[in-house]
Length: 381
Image (cartoon, rainbow, N blue to C red; front, side, top):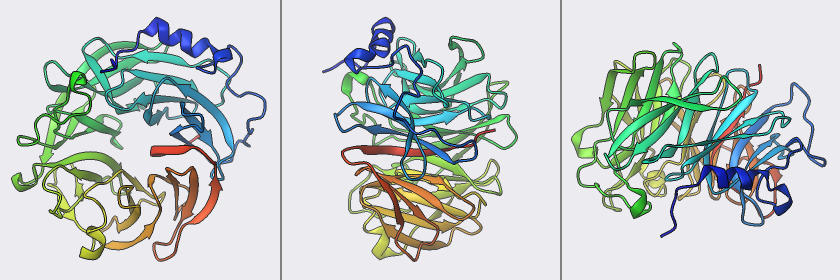
């Protein structure tokens, strides 16, 4: 089995080996031939597989015009951006142990962050409000416990300075609450070990939770969990609505014939409330939510279901099902304007939707590429 450990020196050599097509050249990332967006033009970022089979992070316009491309040594997952929208950090897909910090303008050479020995990333993270720290979901795989790695990114070279326990197994997505102090962690509840690849080792004893952590003290201040009958609904991806409530999508690890609700709304002080689509729609979702997003007004929640090629929409006010659209292998979702969403898919497409009752409008298509799970709107200060 191929090791997931990446030697940092070797990785840096890869990143600097531009002539071999494996990483960054010593010239700015914004190379000749890439699109130069205007200051007020919306930009989005996502991990993707390129036409030649390599992996990258691409910063693009809604039409798919490429402004920056950051090569990766393997498959990426999600990307976090600092409050000013000037720096991003892309995380490896589990069980990868690399993350890459990059300049959104493409003028500064990227930096590599490697997880410590005995740890790997889970694909998600957030910046602190001042942009000086990054918190990343990690697996202490020999101990079977979830962690947030804490990284100081205020200097020229990022450095890991500590860790916070998440109070569960398999921490995946991570949000920063509107108070700027509370971290919200979705503990998926699935035990894994890199020596066993992506095998799930504890499906009978899973305990998925959503944990609220005081990031300054490292204390768990609240914990929410599902009813015991849904202990195999792994809580994975989240978004926060305009009222500050957390919407979390699940990936069900129980019998394939079951049709559990896949979406929950909760708060620090309010237990999860679960929502399902009509039976005919729910039957086609393959018990899997790939991404969760909220539109710019905070009023509409979108969930992607790539295994069922569906995008679903919900009212943030009461969880009412609003409709569904067909998007083949559509998974990445991000708010584009006040009402609508930009959607990325595994065929290289970008499309726009502001009405669940109509088909998304195609904006761009890049032949040969495949967008990965997540799409992130870059809010430039």
